[in-house]
Image 1 (cartoon, rainbow, N blue to C red):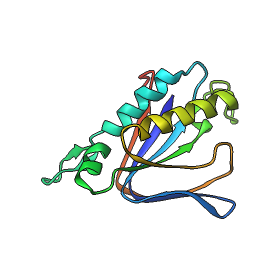
Image 2 (spheres, rainbow, N blue to C red; image 1 turned 60 degrees about the vertical axis):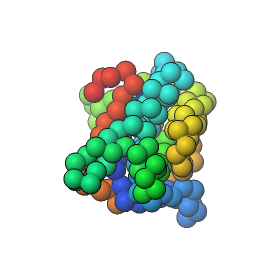
Image 3 (spheres, rainbow, N blue to C red; image 1 turned 135 degrees about the vertical axis):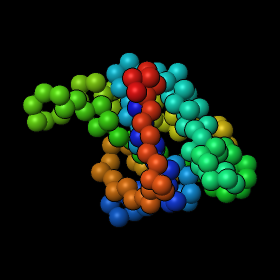
Amino acid sequence: MRAVVQRCRHARVTVDGRVTGEIGPGLCVLLGVGVGDTARDAHYLAEKTANLRVFADSEGKMNLSLLDLKTAGGGGEALVVSQFTLYGDCRRGRRPSYTDAAPPGEADRLYREYVEALRSYGLRVATGEFQAMMTVELANDGPVTLLLDSRKFF
């Protein structure tokens, strides 16, 4: 399972002009599910996301996590958007291959597992709509953008 995690001031996702998810300060997470991923991958990545220390403390150092923001009352929200193209392989030719992306049914199940795992930490989690054409808007704060992989490839 892979994620692109962006610290943001606010973010929202729309489908056919309808807002399906919107957050204030927190993290925008683009989540891809790969062949062979399991619930264990979803829970590992959710724990990593909830505890990433990417928010500034009182001294301006990145020492606070989403959970710390939630506790302090200053945000701590996440917007999670499914993104199978994170498994696009562009090493050959000009058209990406998606053979490493999980089939839609399995990907949807594990996407929901990740979202519920994040919510189990008491975080407010907004979402996109699985398999829909979405518009994602965010104000990247920093900018801070990180790549996560449950198999620790990066």
